[in-house]
Amino acid sequence: MGDEVTKKNKYSIIVPTYNERLNIALIVYLIFKHLKDVEFEVIIVDDGSPDGTQEIVKQLQQVYGEDRILLRARPKKLGLGTAYAHGLKHASGNFVVIMDADLSHHPKYLPAFIKKQIETGASIVTGTRYVKVGGVHGWTLMRKLTSRGANVLAQTLLWPGVSDLTGSFRLYRKSVLEDLINSCVSKGYVFQMEMIVRASRKGHHIEEVPITFVDRVYGSSKLGGSEIVEYLKGLLYLLFTT
Image (cartoon, rainbow, N blue to C red; front, side):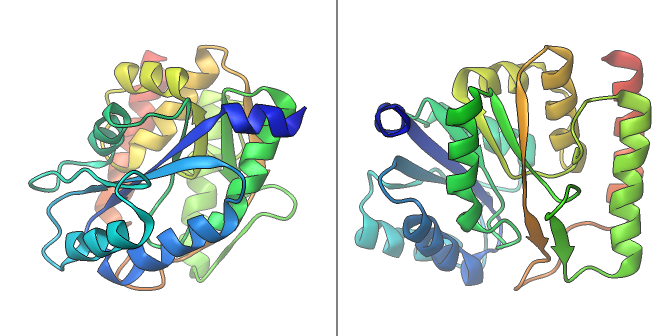
C-alpha cells in the first residue's frame, strides 16, 4: 500500500536561503541522493543574497532541470515566515517540506518523515532533537542549555504535545501549512514555534521523527541575544493568544 500512496503524493521542499552559496549545491545533491522513488521539487526562496547563491542555483537548474529546482527569489531579506508563504505559492505538491539550507537539517531524514506520514496519516511530521536518538552536534553547552531551556519553558507554558518546538525541519500536508501560515503573526525565530503551537491548538495530527541537528558547517549562526529576546516575547504572545 505504501508504494501506491507514495506515487500519488508529490513533495515540495521549500528551502529559504540567504548567503548559502557554499551549502546550496550540497543540500540539493543530498536531497536527490536520499529521495528515491518519490516525486518532488525543490523550491529555493532566496532573499537577494549578495554572495552569488542565485548563480549557483541557476547552475543546479541546468543539472537537475528547472521543473525540479525552482528558484523563486525575492529582492531583499524579508523574513522566514514570508519566505515559506512565498514558496508555498509556487508549490505543486500535496505535501510540503520546510528545511534549512545550512546543512543543519540532513536530507537523509526525509525518507523517515515521508514513511512516518504514510504510516500514521499525520498532517505534520516534525524533526525533534529531544527524543531518544535525536540530538545536537557542534553546539556549545550554553547554546544547548538555552535551546533546551527555551523548549522546556515553552512546553510548560503552552502544552503543545510536541517535544521540539523551535525546530524547523518539518513535513506538512499542504492544506494544513496554508491554514497555519495564514493564522500566524510571528516573524523569524518565533515563527516555527507559533506554527506548531497553533497546529496543536487546531487539533492537527502531529508526529515526530528523531533527528540530529548539526550546527551550520559554513557561515555564521543566526541565533544571537536578540533572537532570545524575540523568543521570550513570542512565547508570552502565544501564551495569551492561543
